[in-house]
Structures are given as C-alpha cells and as structure tokens.
Length: 204
Image (cartoon, rainbow, N blue to C red; front, side, top):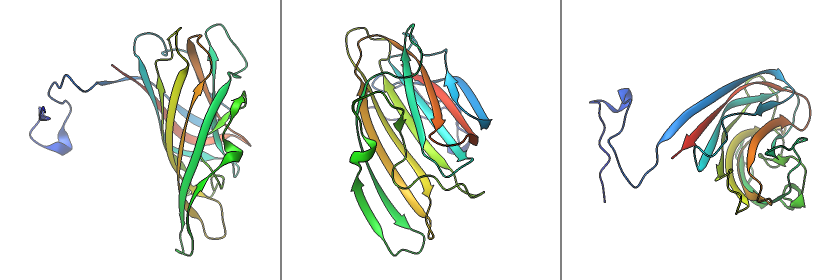
C-alpha cells in the first residue's frame, strides 16, 4: 500500500499531494454563487474529459423553508426531466436532544420518475439567517452511451422545527438512460436559492 506524501512541510499549508496511482485527482472546473437564484444550471464542463464529476454545496441557504433538488438533461435534451430511479434515507438529532431518528423516506425516492430529485430529506431546510445546507453530489460516467448514469449524494442541513434538527441525508440512484448527460440543474422546490456556492470538479 502506498503512503500519501505531502509536498509541503505543513498540512495546513499543503497545496499538492505526492503521486498515488490508485487514487484519482480532483480538478476544479467551475463555481456558481447563488444570489436569490431561481435555478443554478451547469450547462458546460460535463463531458467525456472525466468519468466522474462531483458537485460540492457550500452553505446553500433557501429564501423559503424548502428542499434542495436536482435534475439533468441528456445531450440535446431540454426541460430537465430525465427518468430517475432512486433511494433515500436520513438520520437526525434535535438541538434539545429529545429525539434521534433513522428513517427511510419512500416519499422522496423515485421509481422511473421524471421529477427533480430531492437531496435533503424530512424536514425541509430552515430559512433562518444561520441555517443552510452543505454536502456533495457524485455523478458517475455521464458521457457513457452504454450504461445508465449512477449518482450518490450526502448532505447535511438544519431542518425546520420548533427545536431545529441536524439532518444527515443520504441518496443514491441512476438516470435510466444510455444517452450521455451534459447538463445538471439545481433549485429549491419552493422559492429561490438565496445564497451559497456550488463547485464542480472532475475526477480522473
């Protein structure tokens, strides 16, 4: 097994890792910052250059108490309505420590559905000034014209309640198409994305 070698003396100042053949390398592609945005769409940068793409969400804040969602377009497609089969679950704990729960949510999975896929599960994101969502969406081999397009996601958000919750949400699924996918759109299911950053990386 190879040992990770830092090319700088201090971990806090590291800018590069030594070469490890068994691990990939993240390459920054683009970043979009929400500002009362109805949607955030990535319409370039997703192609055959990389077999894996990762979207990172940093402090996504909704204008309303709402859920954060995504969908895709195949090459030449429009409407962000590709067919999805997915599975979802979460774990949460209340700020006052009165309830800790692990749940599967059939209401937020899809079986050959074309809706926007929810990334955070019950309850919706709180819209207090200090509330937000952070996490990632990992998309595998979107340019394949042989296989369906798998994805996995994990996000953490402050959930709405009289006693707010820390909610750790897990989702996975696939776009049931063998057409290449080249566009991804994010939006709230109610209101705008008030603030936050979405970063796109390729993994080789």
